[in-house]
Length: 215
Image 1 (cartoon, rainbow, N blue to C red):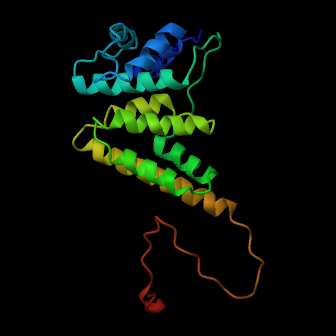
Image 2 (image 1 turned 135 degrees about the vertical axis):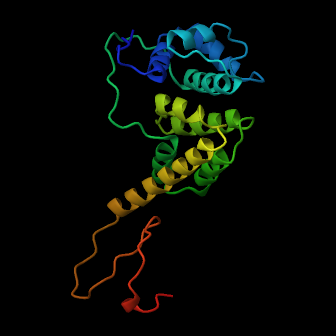
Image 3 (image 1 turned 90 degrees about the horizontal axis):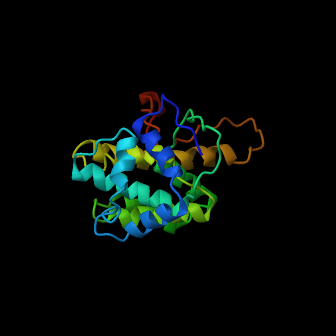
């Protein structure tokens, strides 16, 4: 069983507590994804939140945390190890993880379309959209960073931070694509002809006036 460090954040503690659930509890959580509100049929989930240091007082946060807990149970199995798991230095957003999948699938248009539909989902549509996204990741041997996903989905309905979160996911998705494409591109044969570097998707450099028209 995974040891919970004293320095763990509430979201980290929640994921670790979810890893301690047995198969029957995880199965109950999976079934709860079909509830009108995820987690509605799992009354003991409140205790898991409290033990994690999360005193959930608002319906918005309950829906968000219960949804991610249900998605966790859809993918993960009980952690039977006794080794503590150190927190990673970098926690990727779902946009970054999905961007890596998009590239692994050779930029399949349906994957990009699925991701954009996820960004457009409101809280009512989010359970289905996220379940489809997580299942697609799992089929390729990938899982989201659950701690980061908890943080992000907790902000989904926030009037200002929710919109900013969607922009971050979109930027991470396309930046991941841009970075890997640039890295994997074959090295061209050297010539004496100077070449002008191509602008990337996120290049905001303004050309000098002396360069003339570029259109």
